[in-house]
Image 1: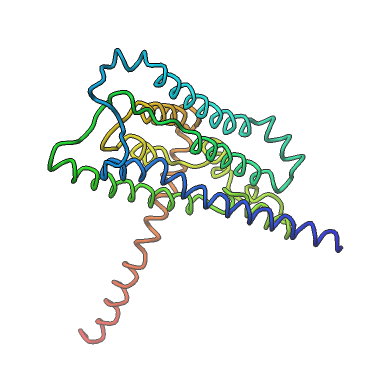
Image 2 (image 1 turned 180 degrees about the horizontal axis):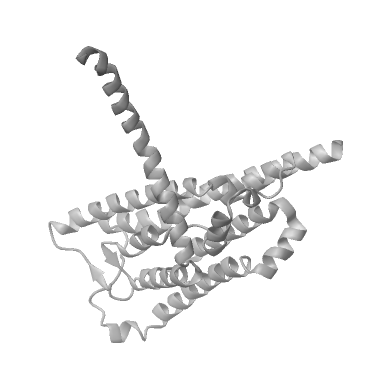
Length: 278
């Protein structure tokens, strides 16, 4: 019994440490992919590109090609990690070996791959920008507009992750259910929800697409980052009409739930006024 208690506490400690690591890395990722690019454009402290250099010269520059090669390798590392560990035979092997920590290991390895990508990413500053807003007054207002839209998108992303069972997504609920002897949390969800999650784990395509592409200046390395991640998001999922129908049914049910208190208060006020009218 003592060994079982120690094992449960060890599982809880590992899952909580992973949660803290994911939270910190998530903040780093938001800074890297979103707000740092906008801040650099507003302040001008960092040179994003050289519009005076022709594309024909920039694309033959060894430093530009070397930076793009490094960045492409980092993206390949992240996509390989994210895809291989989500492959059914690998998932089954990890489930048999790690048990309740399977999802925790997947999230931890994803965060490590992201940290490597952010740490060793090579900005391409010796090439022109594909676009750059530099003329007043849009040189001030457009970055502020981008900041507001990015903030809104990240708020929506966080809300979606909460709705789609954030503890289960990070592996916390798996450990909690393991300690209580309840089995896999996914087994307690409806067949429609299990099917949806098996096709797409975190539906964040539109908001992440806005964050990736809506910037005051789009450099060559940012084009590589946005194009690769957008293509991966578009090709990696396997959603179909049945998943869409499931989402529509639940969206309508949620809207009805939100509408019920209003109808209830209206009926109450009507009923309370009946005696007075009589």
